[in-house]
Length: 117
Image (cartoon, rainbow, N blue to C red; front, side, top):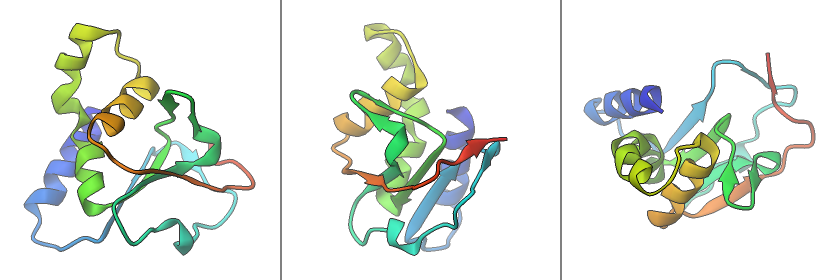
């Protein structure tokens, strides 16, 4: 989560005007090509359909618009407050954080999963 924060801080300091942000763990391997259709035109956080279930969301990959990417990337700033209320578990905490911030979640339909190499 700290590395996501640092990447988000770098992105905010850069004067580029990003329309989309992709968070991708370095140990992920795609077996199917990235689809442009995964990029929505409005506020969103998209995750692979196999990675979003009940009150949890896997952290392997997230495709976001810029503003939602800032929310996703700055989760680390709120970890202490979350830890005062419950145990910290990445999948549950990401989901809870995005819901609290009213981020819109979408599932990306991936026929074959992305795998950890």
